[in-house]
Length: 267
Image (cartoon, rainbow, N blue to C red; front, side, top):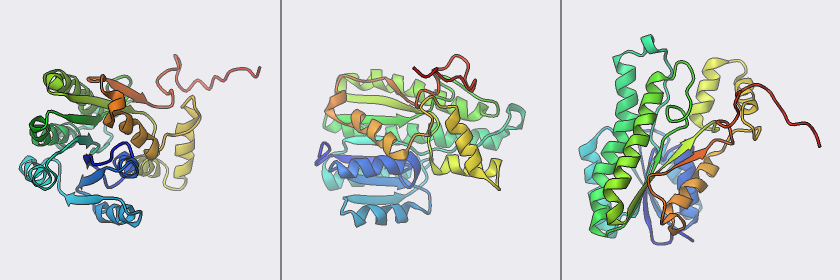
């Protein structure tokens, strides 16, 4: 129960790594508040409550800063503290540079980057009231360390998240608020499954298996594993860690020649 009595807000908590984080935090005793625009939000809430977890939900778009401010005010009024903020809301539209029109770019930046900006502006004032806070931003290895074709807008938004993470970490370090990022690689989430189905409607598993082969560990990561990384950053085990990026990719960014198929010889 490492998060007993802590209040944790998770944006993008209805599915994927946000949901995985919610499950891990709830198991550790946190009061979990999920923020998401997805219709799956209520389903996730019901699943968590079946396990007697403490969970509340707010269905809102993270682009709505004023609504977020209202929600965080309500949370603080109810509990008297807001300890942990996990920003996991995001989208992953792919488009080549010249096909990434204004809407694709604005949606990517407004949700992936702007959503974190809005959420931090709304939540951190309440952390300052108690001189304590843990902010955890889900960025990506894409844009920060590596990139593939047709990922220009996505890469830009995730790179911006890392820059914001460092800037916030410096600004609020004297106030006992840490700000860190998680950089996922190939993770088996609904977003990954959707992209695989779009790439190969008749056999999406073939795409997933192909992705797994590019990872040195030979598999995709899980949402629960993402939650466990977030748990470290949410506890006092990480009390001297701020402005950092934890790479969570099964080693996929390590090979000098990615996708080469090289395997070590049997000993």
